[in-house]
Amino acid sequence: MIQKVAGILVAGLLGVVLVSRVALADGLSAVKECETDTSAPEDFQRLTIMPNGESRGSDNAAKLVATARQKAKEGKDAEAVQWAALCPFEKSDQDLVKRDSAAVLQYLKQN
Image (cartoon, rainbow, N blue to C red; front, side, top):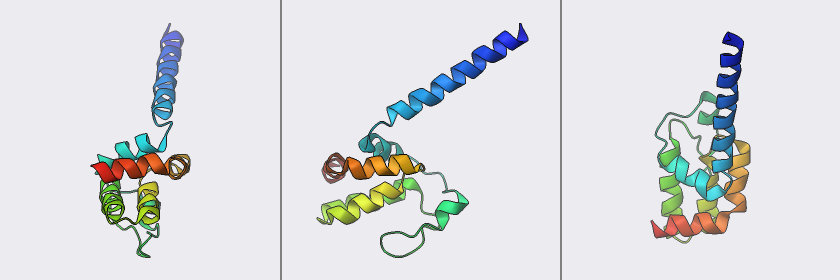
């Protein structure tokens, strides 16, 4: 009985993980999720070199999106995409932001 309940719980958790990964099936969704992320970056992320040549330090994902939004409004589209692509944690999500750069730029410029 306990094994059956444990199996159901594991299956449920896997389902939640898969649904969350499917939810971020595009770069725009990844950027929108980052926009509300005010948690501190992981230690290895703090060492990331930003488009301006500085290390990320304690900048959270929401701050990166705010910077990307400012660059987009200044007409610096390529730089805006670089900033936006740094906000997702996963490399695959970063690649999605770059792939969907037109939609990401449109979103950044309108808000």
